[in-house]
Image (tube, rainbow over all chains, first blue to last red; front, side, top):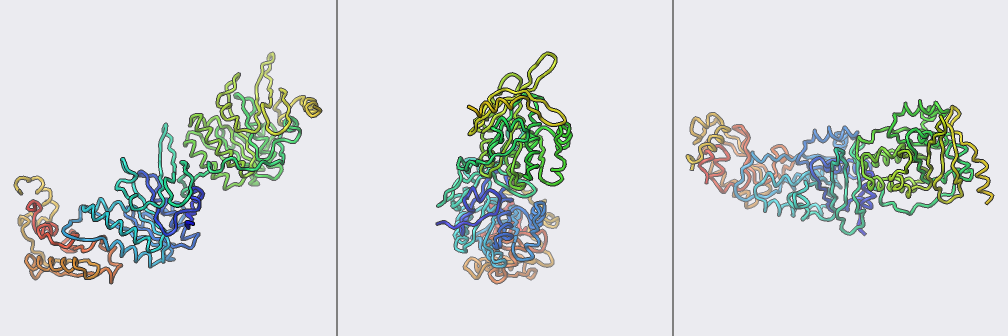
Amino acid sequence: MLEKVPTGIRGLDEVTRGGFPKGRAALICGGPGAGKTLLGLEFLVRGALHFQEPGVCIAFEETTEEIVTNMASLGYDVAALMREKKLGIDHVHIEPRQIEETGEYDLEPLFIRLRHAIDRVKAKRVFLDTIELLFLGLKDERLVRSELRRLFHWLKDAGVTAVITAETGANTLTRYGIEEYVADCVIILDHRVTEQVSTRRLRVMKYRGSAHGTNEYPFLLDDDGISVVPITSLGLTHSALTERISCGVAGFDNMLTGKGFFRGSSVLITGSAGTGKSSFAAAFADAACTRGERALYFAFEESPSQILRNMSSIGINLNPWLKRGLLKIHAARPTTMGLEGHLAIMHKEIEAFAPDVVVTDPITNLVSVGDLTSVKAMLTRMIDLLKSKGITAMFTNLVIEGDVDETAIGISSLMDTWLVLRTVEQGAERMRTLSLLKSRGMAHDTGTHSFSLSDKGILIHGNQQTISATQAQ
Amino acid sequence: MATSKPSAQRRRSNSNSRQARKTGGARLNPALWELRLYVAGMTQTSVRAFENLKLLCEEHLQGAYKIHVIDLLERPTLASGDQIIAVPTLVRRLPTPVKKIIGDLSNTERVLVGLDLRPAGTVR
């Protein structure tokens, strides 16, 4: 069994099934700005902080001061780690114009510097960033190659777990074919921009002697460093819960045999503009908080204060829940980032807040940053994640009046319960109606009911009889 | 060769010291040349480098030079100061600017150019 060294980076250890290969070298390749250096540094810093594994960074690009500053912005005190001899950084500067070459030489000083750095902190982890620069600095490519081969053998003998970065080449994995020397584990970082929206992705291209996730996983680079979203690995293995929870509207619970949703199920609410989707969503969150549960509300249309104001007008006061920390509203414009980015952030928020219920209001806006296929893929991952955690989720979706949007059809198969809201013109009035298109695993009211929104909340008219009738059958 | 590439030569000699240009780059007579030769153990290559350097200094810089031989196996911490990545490496500390020459110094012409003891155009 191949021993592994955990990176401690959120999600990456899941994707690699435990981390990097112990005592071997892993290669991280990607274009400029893909996040290679940060990944390597996090591997070192987290190793030193959480796994009692001191590390050494041989930095060919950045100076020690630059690294200290960059890591400080992520909240890591690299200077302190260096003082405590948990981390060593040696900046290797190669200035090609300064160097004249004549006659035989070898790169023994690199080995000496590395050995010295390793001995000083008793390092278990080594990060070489970016050793390819040797090819730029030295003219004798054959010598550099044979010395690199020697270096990687040497690293293996030293028993350290190494991470090496390299820039992506035009036709090859890396510009100078470094993969020839380090091939135990190859990770590719990618930074794509589609329609002005950028998304970072990570893929394990190769992992000798180990199973690994093969998909492209979105990852985030933010104040907390790197976090990878490995949700696709979950699949349909979650267990179905039988517990029922209220949806926050008494009449609506009645339509669901009086008990509400299954815990851990996913609920879709579709409707055209102004049909009251957000009101149902807020009622649902409110009910969860009333039970003492935690609710996470992703708002892609309105700001938190706007939601609070609007909901208080229909008698739903969310303020106390916010103050007590039971409710968290995460508001963001969909266009601020790509779908994968949203998924990554939602994933992170869910991990951090550990909610019992999650509201996404509305998912329609996410469609504006992705096509139907990717929206569906993202929702699938999202729902898999939520189900595996037993989190009940409610999604609202805006459709054009009169027809059921194709998006709704596309995603409705993922949902356990689908509620459709409509407004019907009745003389001078517009009447709000609702009907359940489906609710998996339970008898449910199939009728269309009118409902009203008032300062007392959502009131569903005349469905008591219908539900009794259904039960009688 | 030198005349066939005047522009290249001018560019190179501009980066040299003004003194070098005045004397046609043929020879400098600074007060003292401070040279460091970095090696890793007394290998054949390092011995050869030292001998080549000694010969060259005697011929061109007689009485005006100092050579420090630094063995990185004994003093590994010194490698980062002068940013040494290969051995042997000759570092010209003085006169400034600092110059580095990697290798066993077997190609005397290249070493002379590298040390600004001969203009670049004369090589090849």
